[in-house]
Image (tube, rainbow, N blue to C red; front, side, top):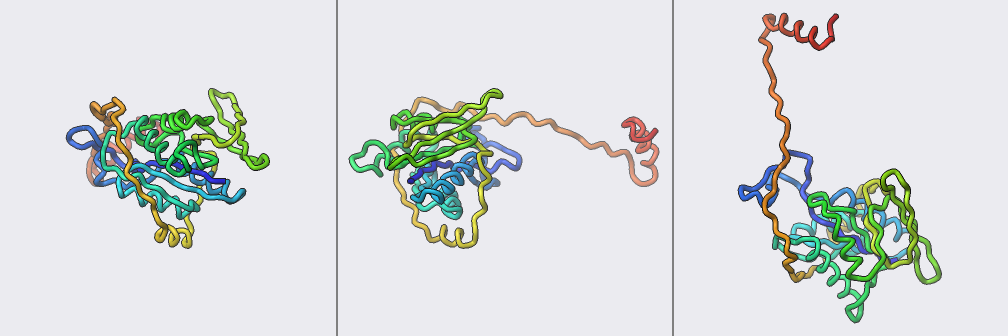
Length: 261
């Protein structure tokens, strides 16, 4: 079984988010980078399938040269090959991104049509843009079945081919879909528990070759007008006093809070 997992280099959002002066991009100078939790689960799911059935896991990313770090992190947990579509050009919308991925997939197939992968896995949405579209658009361009928002995935061998059963919950209703592979599946966080990279895995990832290409950029008609950081509630601390003089005010405050009776 050959599985392709598409990932995206996104900023870590554990701290405060600030924008550049033109309000077009996030100021990433003080932020680290990672892939989204959904995509971490997609990589883990691919590795588990290959451990069971054999084959290869290829991870693919579209982004700047620095995205090689995220690809090597995926190799460290079990991916066997990495492809980086190198671009520093901003403005890659979901349509342009999907077309670039499809071009890369078709280049792997002799004759330039179809796909050489049994399964294409995506995170349900990227952690930064949350557009939910890339996996669906890739499936449409390749003419493949697509299942989205998946929280469980079972693959079975049927002769020389594979079939999959995917499950998800929607508005309190459990849904299950069965389809033949090849197919596109977008998974959600919680489908599995991603493993931590081992020391041998990290060493292997450092030496792994990353195949690079330059995708053709297309203007898909969508342009960022402005980013806006949601308002954050600001709280102020009140100094009740200093030393023993603050005790009466402290007691009064505790009484108001109902701590003292």
